[in-house]
Image (cartoon, rainbow, N blue to C red; front, side, top):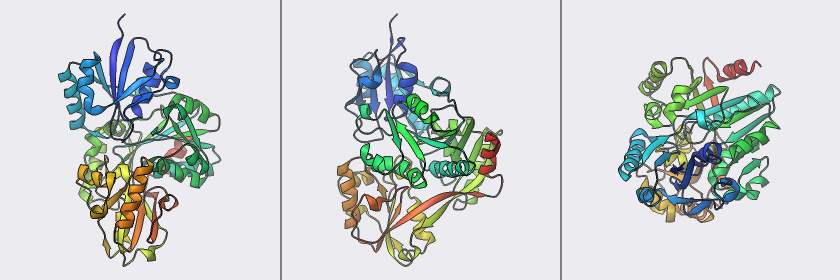
Length: 439
């Protein structure tokens, strides 16, 4: 029987997972290639034989997404499968229309074929968009479970930006593990907070292998999702975080809308800084489209290392890169902290931006007065450092999940902004978690 020829549109995450769990040993299909988007530097390499399996002894090529119509024709593609996240419905259908116009079918894959079953309970924390507050929610649950005497392991959505053959299973338990695995800023942003709290976090490429190793040291696995992707593991408790600063996006972005519809618990975060009418819209969408879910309000509680270093100062705000770029937010935690703690003004870094950082402002014109903490390569980290040092300000506010002062040499005072999950009223998230696990 002729194998159906598949091209997978991806971003070094969901695409690889779908291949590993459904296509790798399935001789009904032939994956002729992956394409790459969103993340710089992940195209023009190969998914290696150590991961691709016996049906693909030479590995699988990874192409730039911009070429995919040409690839459909040249590679004889029957089906194009979209397998990455945080895309507007309009973008999804534009990609689908391009695939169909090129002569292929267009498909999405759901959880039934792609979720791995766990031997221990799984709590999944997902979101409707990048930057809603998944990780702080996951950390709050992890701390609660540890206090209840449970062994907790977090598994983070993949970010395999280096040598894929060396990133099959990654375990992080101490700072030295970041150097051992050659982590980018984006990777450290997702792992470092767990390490600071004394938790183990896993990531990598082969998420069934990761789960089997994590199960050996966990009573409960927390799936800490990336972007607004679906869980890779079948959750016993499915929590989705929504963002009233982007009202309506919970029903207009892929696959975040699926998270919104499937959730057992909907956490409406940032409730104290959202407009009342925007908060009401998200809650109405929850009641209308997922009436079985328990809905609760929460806030991202800001903690600043040195409030006096902010008050009355002209500050540069450095915020989480993916939240600002494909997440579409014009500001992040550092900007909110600058306003809340009395900064005299927020200094725009645009004029001082250099190299790929300057290109980001051209690609994402909604960014004006905040600097995305981008660091996908040593060269980009150096450009970030130069941009910060060339910006004339009194202090720098780092609103990323990690301590960038560890990685950058900054020639001006730097203040770290942290954010933690906090319930607003009842029901409380901790009560729902306790009920699920019968604590």
